[in-house]
Image (tube, rainbow, N blue to C red; front, top):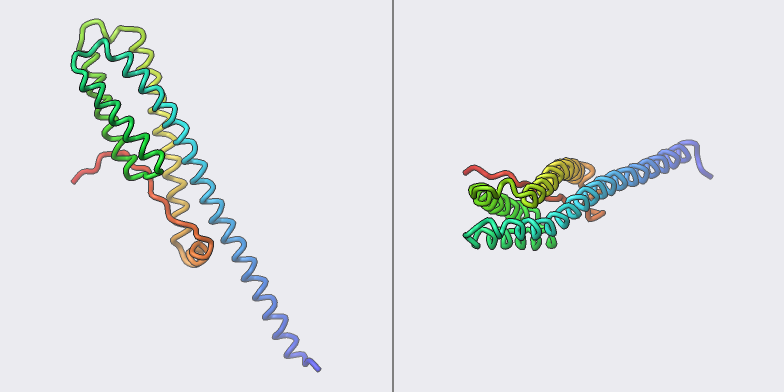
Length: 184
């Protein structure tokens, strides 16, 4: 026969188990939501990087008649290829480095084109540069959204007791997408 004390202990134990399971489900769902936000933000960046990849080809073609130093065009193409490879590998550290190299190479190419008389007024160049600038602005905005999602994800993965659920659910920290130059 079960005594009232035994019944009370059983109910308390059952309630604790239900609360623990409920907490695990909530923690798992929160971690999953953070991971999904990060993946969605990355997908938006990825789409823009693909668009810019194509746009850069057209931009370099537009610039070629205006520059005598073909190495400037080659530098942009090499940096574009490095960005594409890092994007494909989802290596945000390498992507940040490749982005810095691409920005520098593109800046040198633009400066060379603008230094030639009349080329800055070329309608094709102006239109191509405008399209590229709009893509770059969109990338900066999307990068900020991605990095915020990464910050939230990493906080959820790193904090106790969520980190226990993260370990069990194989949720991982994600590296931010940093393009800013690092000062030594």
